[in-house]
Length: 580
Image (cartoon, rainbow, N blue to C red; front, side, top):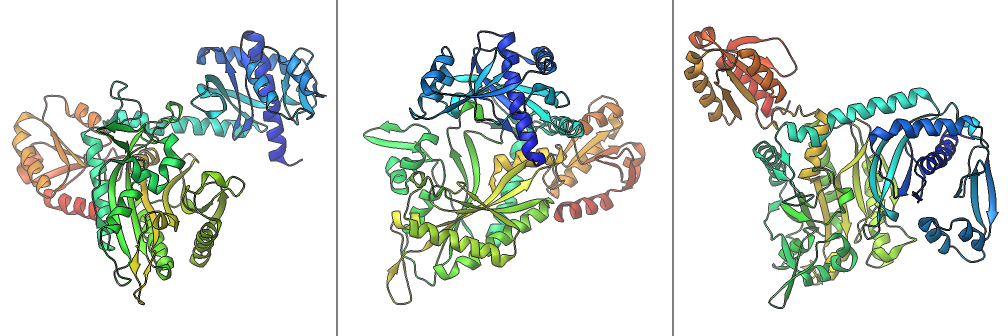
């Protein structure tokens, strides 16, 4: 047996040990499911209320069960026998009732007093689990079968590894993740806030966060303008008929906010921008000589994410997409997608992203009902993207079931500092929406023909991109992006006029600067600025004021360098211009 298969089997066996331990400690709980997952396993329970204070007790009971050398015994039963075994267990009963009447059902016993509905496999005896390394990670809510229409259950996550060093590394990464958590850092750095009174998943961007968003928006819009994109602004809602035409209402309405009716009209908050951009294209007559037409927008969108999926600004109900749609001729597809890939790589170079790969996201051919359009167009789109990736020499892999409902896409998967894989950029090839919106251009033979649409987002959403940046940098954002680039600290009150003079000069150069002229000690002012993760602290005393100098402390350094103000200004502007 391969190591991965062995570890999966051990984790699955441990999930049964966990369920038995919980049932022993809390007899009134109801069992749901408990699979092996990456880094461990989990089990879902109903009628269970525990906290971190209970973890040690639960782990002790699990070790007690393991120490008993209890056998895992597989038994085949009929559907009727299974229903009798699991009387009083509604979640198991639901699963059993969905099985065919004549299907043999497997049940695994752990000792004589616990059994669970399961296909296996498992270790032969709990004695094989004695050296297994595990630790309860967390407890959270989880909807039964992942549907928000079902009851919220209690899920216990457990880390589990055959190798002790793997568990240690996992726990180290967990601590590292806590230090990088954008929710904590975002609060500490006054980037964003949340309020249940405003609404779950609706972030409020504070002044520091708005400065950061503006810097990101200006950066990507400047790049797009240099590449021939035209920026637009469209409404954050639209007629329901717009989304019926695009197919979103039929295929995506469960993820949209409810429709709003006024004066016999029905509107919805938009989940994405493509329908609006289709109508902008349709508003004008186009010749083949006009193409490609590149329409871009920094646009606010809304999706009703389940409350269990919300996570700071990484996953929200209101977010801002760096979105664009390229309307082109079929013979332009290759060049346009290659241009988008080049833009992505250029952006990643500026941000220092190096650990990434391309994923070709295809539809699930076994479940085509959730996609619209015909098979020929899907095959055509998928083949085109595959050939472009192959010819580009990009490192890519294919993933069925990850396509958008209207077309396949290229996703760029970036590995984070703690090993998580995050989708940042996407490129989608779409023959479907031009058909649905009856888009046209006049070709060289004066025939009206359909354009092809390329959907692309470089940042994805500004919100998720910001969350990723905060976690990658531990809040030490690049100087050019940092909401506050320079903090001026005065030694005494008589140095305030010089501080104001230096502050004014920096502002004239569009440097984001603030002066702390309070009566606090210099040491405390520096500590406060350090906690704010300010890239540069300027300490101004009598010597600096008398000679036109600044004493500079760079972020992460305890050393101070004294230099003429003009020299500091020149160096700072160079750092910002070069995005160092």
